[in-house]
Length: 305
Image (cartoon, rainbow, N blue to C red; front, top):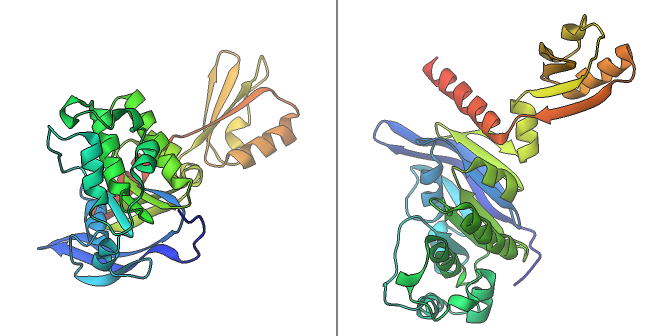
């Protein structure tokens, strides 16, 4: 598997797709760097599924363009540049895992070796197990390996861990990280926001067919959530805390002050400058879920206006 690539994996330019009067994707511009792992988030109806389907050549856009390593989506699929793991699809119950994976391998001119596929997806000990004897998590790992059979440069996954328990999800993502570590590109959609935060090095949020945010998880949390600065105030006065830069509210619980702030750096710097050393200083940030709700709520308000 190659580990270096200079060109973009995916380039989406001015993409539009409507269903009747409904604009599913509305002028989307997006570029994915080779070797990146990107989470595509958005509420139902945000356009993310339509974007994925056009990327895979399953839908034709009304206007705009998509290139996957310089090729049209259909051509990229035919060349084996894209591996897709969608929610739909099933395998014959009586088939063994080995047979399913060899079926996938026979679809490509230069497939990955069976042993490497099994190792990547943690299926080595399950190759002679029948599909109908697998757990839900094991079936998902078979589907993952099936998507990798052609040695793709880009792996696209739609809600890959839906319905799996925590252990199965962790095992699945171990395989994805193993694949991504070879320098390949991964794009996945999910409703598990903590999963996106942990697995992706870049997060794209869509609302109403447009980009609402595109950055790292940390940057999105920093920009779209408030943070809390707390410290031991003891018997000192809380006067003036509400006037510190960035402070939105002040709460005193026992001997601790809790400052909700939109700019934790400015708050802490001024706090130390005006009050001197403080004890037991702690900073806590909003979660990706908080940021996601903030983004989607703002988009809904703008849409209604």
